[in-house]
Structures are given as structure tokens and as C-alpha cells.
Amino acid sequence: NNMVLDCEKGRQTAGSIILLWDRHDAENQQICVVPLDNGNYALQLVHSGQVLDVEKASKKSGAQVIQYNWNGGANQQWPLVPAGDGYYYIVSALSGMTLDVSGGRANAGSSIIVYQPHYGDNQKFKFLPVK
Image (cartoon, rainbow, N blue to C red; front, side, top):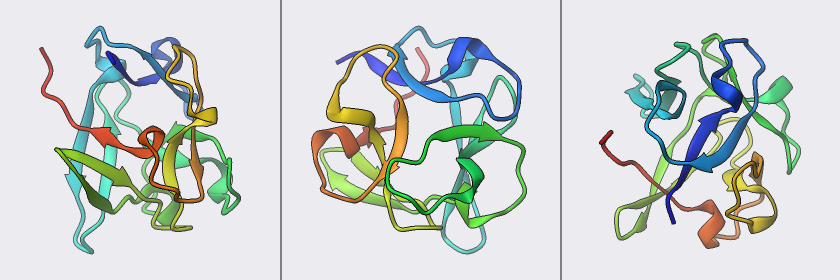
């Protein structure tokens, strides 16, 4: 499909939710993969300079993923685990849960959450160059 991670409505505000949306390559859909000294990665949104963050450092399955200012917490660090064919599982260093398209629905507006790993297609992500 042609869906990508997106910061809702291009908002710059810390706490804005991350969702799935049709690809249009605006800066709120561009993510820099920043290697950290511990082998994890920060995933920084170009439009705001903020990073993907598990809201309120929650360890609960189903916790919302948001953008937030970098503070170095484990809820902002993501090991990348190869899933084959150029895809990755993006794992929360805080909980071991995997980035997930809520409900497995690849629809515009679907929430991006962390969820228990089940290695379904809704937990596989590919990093693409900007067109």
C-alpha cells in the first residue's frame, strides 16, 4: 500500500499523535533514523524536530505513539529488528512491544501504537527515501 507514518495534520505540538496516512512526502511524514550510542535509534520527525515517543512512558499494550521533545528516555528509543524483504520491526526499548497499526487496518487515520509482538504485517515497516 501507499500508507506511511504521519504526524496528525502536520502539528508541531509535543504530544501530537502519530497515525497512518496516504503518502505525500511532506515533512510531517519524513523521519530521520538517528543512531544512538547504545545501538538503539531515535526516530526524528523532520517537520518538528521531535521524536517518536510512547505516550507517558507507558508499558501497556495499546499505548499511543506521539511526537515529543527528545529527553533520552527508553520510551523514545527503538531497536530496529530485520523482518525480511527490507522491512523492520520497530521495537520499544522501554517495553519490548512493537510499533503497530492499531487493529491491523491499513486505513488513513489508523492510530500507531505499541503492541505485544505477533509479527503480523501491521507490525512491519519499511524505510523509504523521499520522492
